[in-house]
Image (cartoon, rainbow, N blue to C red; front, side):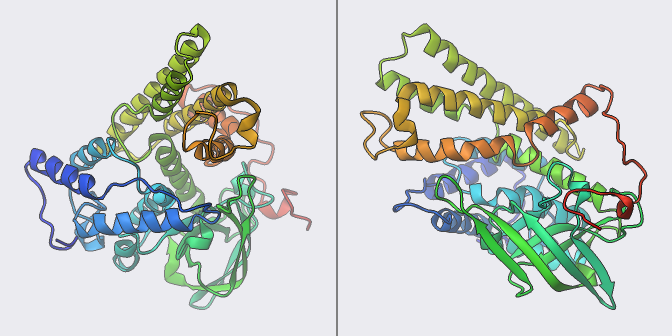
Length: 414
């Protein structure tokens, strides 16, 4: 069966069984053959699984059929997530592509763009990346300096982005660029899609402490794109970028599964049992803290998904799940260091009876620090929660209403 000839499931029990049968046959954990410094193996694993999902008529469940989806309901997606929760996550490297770029393309792309690009994106044949941050515009993304200028029937883009996840594996990307510097910094921004294989784009991987090269610097030098690759309204890119950031925080904070998930508690409690530490009251208390936080994170995710099912766009509540995930990682790191000691920073393949795949713990700990940064720092999430969830007063904005070309921001010198 292919994605184009799959018929909608009116019987949810039958649909659930179809999901379960597919997962039992295809959802396998990735066993790395040695180091995977550029994520080549994991990306290939995600692509292959997603293509099988697409061919089985189980990808892009809620997207319209004419755009490569299945035209099904949010209830079908929830059923899929509930079943997927019991299996290894095989699409981790597609979180940005599917959790952020495809929803934004679906919301703001023209029908022509959606018909041309979404089917391959949904199938995992094309991977997409998101390009917001710049050397002088991190938490304050609105200070970005990458510019797009109209030249006849094309846009010409010049500038630099940084911390772009999987840019070196992506076929396409979505970026925000300044299109009108004479208005306030939030008002003169637009959103575009670009072809990452264009020779006018230079991608430089960033070497990480864990040996990987997951992130990249991206440089644009007179990149020409069609005018039709403008996503949404000209100079309204900040609102679209905000929507994309909300999708990002939902994707990071809720994951690709549903129900109550406590993966770190499960794994740590197993290791505590192996090490004979489960009778230690302090260890038990710390384990239960992780269990409680993972449970709370799952409940927040379920509420967020329910709001999206009701037809509401993801709101600031997505920051709650994002912040929960970061806080959980702090506790997980602390417990691992207590379990293992100094060996945590110089792991060997045989960790004195600890997890036989202990080297992956080591990589996870090193990678985990980005959970406090990616998708907006913990401080930014707290500001959003305080402002938009709790209704607390906002910080004073000294540049409100000031034209961008009159500001001295980031690396802007003139």
